Amino acid sequence: MASQRLQTLFQKFQTEAQFCIGYPGNADFDYQEVFRFLQFSLNNIGDPFLESNYKLNTHDIEREVISTFSGWAGLPEEKVWGYVTNGGTEGNLYAMFLARELNPGGILYYSEESHYSVDKIIRLLGMKSMMIRSLSNGQMDLEDLEESLRINRTSPAIVFANIGTTMKGAIDDVEGIRGLFRKFAITRSYLHADAALSGMILPFVSEPDPWNFSAGVDSVAISGHKMIGSPIPCGIVLAKRENVSRVSQSVEYIGSLDTTISGSRGGIQPLLMWHRVQSLGEEGFRKQVSTCLEMADHAVTQLQKLGLHAWRHKNSNTVVFDRPSTQIVQKWQLAVQAELAHVITMPHVKQGTLELFFSDIRAEQKGRKEQKSQVSSGFGEAAPSSVPPLSKKKLRAKSENCITLVGPAQAGRLLAVSQALTESGIDIESFEARQVEDVDVITFQVSDGPLARRLLASVQQAGKVYGYSENTPAELALYLNSASMTQLPEDTVLTHIDDTAGALATLTEHLNKQGASSFSLKLLFRSEGQGTVAIGSEDTQKVAAALRKGGYAAFGMI
Image (tube, rainbow, N blue to C red; front, side, top):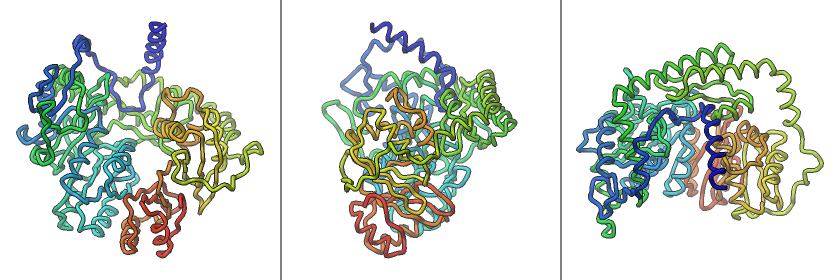
């Protein structure tokens, strides 16, 4: 039984791997020489630069990996500290932990194009934060950052810079950010570079954007399973050794220092990264990157010929274009956001694969009229009489089984989400739906809140549910991704601001003057010259009162 299950799973992966072109995972690798090490319980517990009581480790291999990456990241080996992580998110978490410890009371500034894990990191670390607007090309809007820093110039500034944004491959202006620190004489600052994908592209191009330690950053996180390629998610985080030494602590049990996020760490991941680096070498990576960028140019040209307005940034293999049909998105595992989709030309994405993809789009375009008719018949309709009337029962805003969704007003929303929850075995006990200035706010009281949150989050982040629920309706995936739906955390107030640079900073200044305690500000979405903002606070009533006093709207979970 077990063998048959494994064989079925293997065949499924063989098939799906042929159509994986929307996410930055390199599948072009061969680690057969390393497989024999899987018979050992390898554990890189403790600091990689110190000996441990546990001898089945690859610390020496890990140090070689760190040494190689320090050269690519522009910091002398003797000045760098780092370790091999479980992926980019852990690297970013470590960097923000380090930044918080070095700058108590600091405000974390991150753009609306930052990876979705940043919100989670903020909650885990309890950091004050401000989301900064992004330009249409995905870069952080430095005018908005400038206004925010001006208003909060007495607080330490921690900036999370994107070195290749998740959706558009944009690289934030690192030198411009450092210039703003100097302009406002902000001496307590920290600049982190999330270089998950581009950290293994920029060292191998002729004209790299400023991005690493030589450009003034304080830490760098790079993924190993992306451009390098690995069967196991992994990555590396690098930081200035002098900063890390200020937050380290000794642990007698392991005979080492506790300097990493996870105590026990995989010993196989450093071995995989080391093997890949040794096999390809710097010249091999340079050729690989060059080929990926050539494939990206080819994809841009062909997609433009198909009328899909394709484009990419100079040193990026992320090709952005108009979002195709749900069938294309799901078959080719494309990442999507609102009206955009992207293809990432990783080393395993050959020209033949791209031609098959273009062929599917041509076939789709031939049947576009019929397909549009089919899609429109299932969406944009008012909820039928089978949907229960709006409940008058007051919902418990802080219950774990209470979920609030917010998004631009769209007919059919209540029907799509309620059917999806019900078909996934989640009972809707009561709900309330409101429309505030072209914004839908729907609150559900459900039988299993944690399950419902995971269901909705997985659909939003991936465009479909990967193995979590086989019964999730396809229309839910289409709806959540096209309607910019957002799940609100507890203790959140919504408001509107003008969609202009500095508007978020002005809102913060007003709240501070009113004595309202806010721990996070996030721009959810934009519509017709306005932005809808979520304000996280321990005292939502006080925040709502402060907003109304300043002429702002106040709605949501209050």
